[in-house]
Amino acid sequence: MEFEEYASARGQELVRLGFTVSGDYQRAEDLAQIALMQAFRSWRKVQRADDPHTYVRRILINSYLSMTRRRSFTEAPAAELDPDRTVPDPATDIVNSDDLWRALATLSARERVVLVLRYYQDLDDRTIADLLGIKPSSVRATASRALATLRRTRQSHRVDERLP
Amino acid sequence: MSKTELEEDLRETFERAAASVPPAPDLTARATTGAKQAQRRTWIASGGAAAAVALVAAIGFSLSGGGPAASPEPAASAAPATSAGAVAAVTTPQMLSGTWRPVRLDGFATLKTARPDDPTLTFAPDGTWTGSDGCNAISGTFSIGQRGEFSSQANGQRLIECQNVPHTGVLAVAKRVDSTQTTLRFYAADGREVATYARAR
Image (cartoon, rainbow over all chains, first blue to last red; front, top):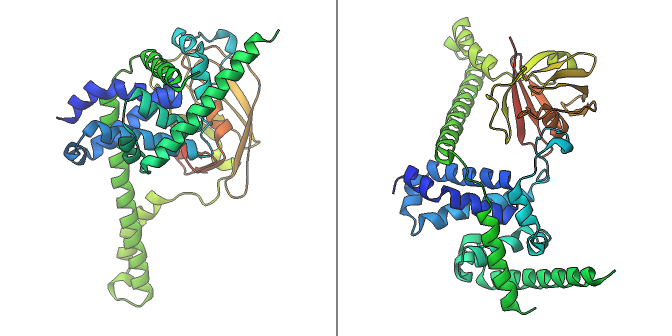
């Protein structure tokens, strides 16, 4: 498979993966572009991998995790626009209406990545471990901790809703 | 809530979030162009490094009493490499003085879009800057430390939205600056280059 063929077939999937891990459309596009750029530069090596898509997903996930480790993670040049004049994206409303989506934002980057790979990408723990360069037992422990956090967060939200 | 129910909810949430992602146009072209540009930068950097090594070797050879290198000819041939790689050791407000146009802003892909005004920045030696983001006049103050530390404060203003070039965002994030006669670069706290400007003619 040639690079152009792969990128046009899987590019949008990479943006979606980027969005599920980062929760930010702009960052999702950046992540997909970084992953594709790196894949393009070493495409022969990517082609030789057992599963080229897993290889590119690994680049994307590792780029995201390194991005979150930088001190300037939250800093990005942006115009200081008048908030009254900005037009809300309807898609953002759909996503923001979900309390579970909001609860996911409270997890660490690695916890969220593990959940995305497990429940969105449907990867088994061994593949996730291989992708992240950690042991399968660490994947299980991270997932278990993340699920416990989400369960607690949702329960506390439900209690809050009952309060006057 | 059972674990299975939560896991099921997670699957649905991720699917819904993924489905809300708008199509990203030209991903393939952007990736290949970006990779080629990065490769070109690497070659230029390697070429610059090779030229610098050659220059140091030539100087070392001439200082050690080597014959032909002591003549003016090698020094003349080495001169362009020095000026090409020359970056001012310390950037001062005077060196920033003048008008600059954006060449690259980190994470901002629509610099070439047509806008009502030229999106330039003008720095004055008195520590003030003015400019346009393409549709609004913007201004503020800045200071530069002895080692190129940079800080800036934008004056408050209401902005009309028009794919504004985020000069104010760049200046707010920039923590260090360096410049040559023709190029101005801003860096974030982690050393990442956030913007490059060229002197406007």
